[in-house]
Image 1 (cartoon, rainbow, N blue to C red):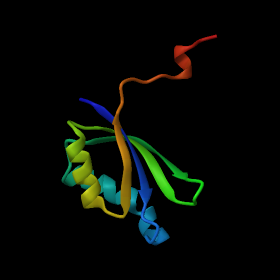
Image 2 (cartoon, rainbow, N blue to C red):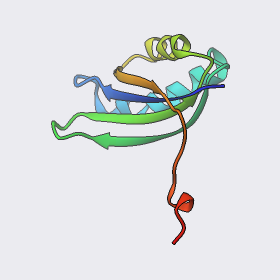
Image 3 (cartoon, rainbow, N blue to C red):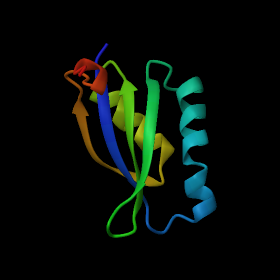
Length: 95
């Protein structure tokens, strides 16, 4: 099944406590309504403009279910979704 990288930014007007709860709400939606999606991991960030966001890795049958999950989750905007074509790590280049 394809893997995707999703870049998101949290809505600027979302209170901190609600923003902090997005990951738990996302996991709940995945377990109950979007069982075809698999969340591998995420990296949280604060960008140069002070916006909170995340880079998330998902396994999914396609992009449409990822958009549907994001819509059900709310509280954020998808900046981009790209399909992952492969992985590279330092272990691939031993010295």
